[in-house]
Length: 555
Image 1 (cartoon, one colour):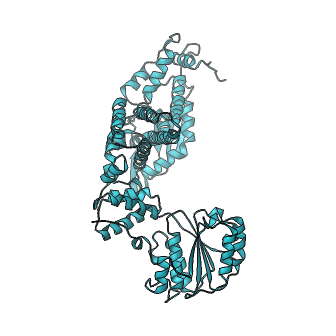
Image 2: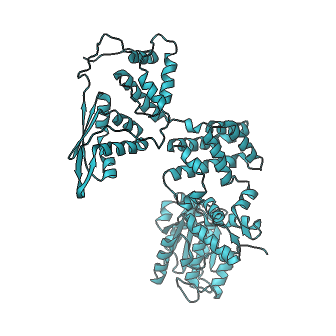
Image 3: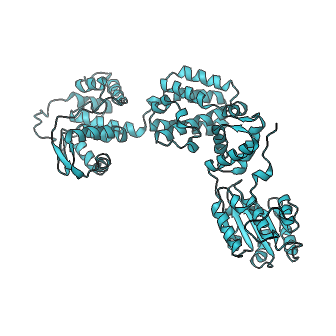
């Protein structure tokens, strides 16, 4: 049995059948019902969204024997001739191949003759922006003062190339891209009419690849149906068109999450051996990381992902941070831009796979600078604490406060310990809070202890704002009285930093606890330190050694 999509099913026959262009259909219907027919229309928008089809429907509506009517019968002689393209009173002109002034002069001569057997003589000029300036100038007077039986319908994909003098004489309609869901529903309707079995994922893939163009969707659909044998599945599409499947991408990215570069490159080789082109491999890889990024942002809409969220690997979703996924998308985009000029595309792809094998270790420049600033101030103040990371290695670093300044490995020790500070914190680990028993009354007889406030706020900030989490963790005391939260710090740096971010903290507290507080900070720097200023501090010496700087003491 042969399956095909016929032109009659593809092309809408009435204004109400214009999918995704409801505004255009409603406006044209209203103007026809009220018999307010303009002499010139300008339809603009992307390719394949229904501009030419709308022009033909409008021509039918105006010249139908039972009209003008917004619902042409489609069966009368005029309607059938317009549908077949052989009506003497509806002239379709390709603006791309009739660009000269002489072609327009022929139209000027023809408009003097009344229509043969219709109410209107209609000129449909497609790709009108291709006309020359001379042709546009020759058309101006005719558009502005045409005979009462003449209607011009212009269609263009590049409205900015149409002169303003032409646009001002036309009623303009801007056609929009059609949504993925709408295209998918139309394809499903055609498949049901044809008795074709199909998977929703396959139709979603076709609709997504059409990028809002219904004509492109129909063209791709016809191609896919030709080899589907009555059963349209995503696996057949992937096999025939040389695409990387979702299951393969899940396995590849799981290998990346494990950090096994050799396994990643070998698996990439097995995918390419199935006939997948390198460029297509990069495109599919970038789309997969884009979908993971959407999921991390809690976007689960199937029309955006192309698949149900349950089909994505949970390991791949949880293995990377948002910053790491953004970095992965940037890498794939950069390779796609560079690959056409590459001397060895395969080598470029292998390098990309190798980089992505260590993706979980990537730290964004902003996070690095924030952590360096926090660590530097901790070392200068002599208050290194395990607040950035609660693992055992970080605690060991905070306890080992003596480093030999003359040691040649001082820089290596510093950066090795800094690297440990940036290791991710496991979700199971909870923030320890001091046993403070202050209680504050909240709206609607709610109450919350300082202990609970500190624990839940720090846990929330661990994922929302790591730098602020680190600073708040260094607060010596937390005091919650009525509507005021007082934080005491040993360091002026943390105190100032928290003061600057107090608005953000107040907003987060309001979201979590549904209460409003004021944040006060107190710095105890310089009070009761009891340190000998002439005595050398090993941690300060370490910073001076690494950064080759000098300690400047304030007055």
